[in-house]
Length: 305
Image 1 (spheres, rainbow, N blue to C red):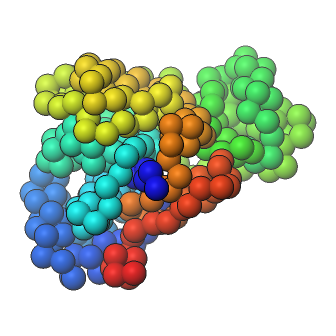
Image 2 (cartoon, rainbow, N blue to C red):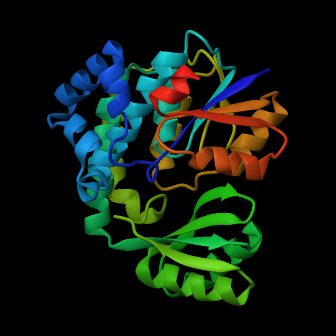
């Protein structure tokens, strides 16, 4: 069995996440206390008690999911050795920590800044996102192209066959939704988000993030990590400049999740383990490659079983 560790992105959070792990394992408690220190606010309180509206703020959500995912990884890594890693959007940072390219502390500092800058860019450049279900990716790309006269719009996430998310200006996205529906989409649904993630409207977030990425120490990855921007692996002999470049471009580029999974399968992955809150990625992987095994670690009960 060749195992791939996969890491969720924004949207997988829920109030109460990580609480049972924190109460059951001293090393998890230690990790969360360290996270509180780095972040300068009580991540534990927001994760464990909410309110949900606070947890949903981008600058909180991203560190919350990142910390939870690493806590779970630390609990299982002595028992399961992955051959590959990948993460959806924010999850790419978690995958790099898992592959020992980044320390947890440095990763969390980057994720904190990324969340803050993305939230700021979302306030500065008002935009939105929408899910398009049941339409071929090429037709969705055409819809975005045809709608571009109304405003900025592009594919943000190629999640799985028949599930794509678009992102951009409110006018551009709404026009693309109308066109996608005419082209035969089964469902078009605007998402409740705090910005047009993975679109050119995130451009203002890039400069500060670039500085921080350039000043962060990266090591070569211990296992291949599949990049969001092109679905190809950064391998142990790759130069760390490749990692920096990928994280920088990722903010305004599409997340090629379906291709990443197919490339991992092609390279030998036959079991995908999601580490962190929820089961979103397990569902996507099943749709992308129905023959592989999927499971997840989120709560204490998952660790014990």
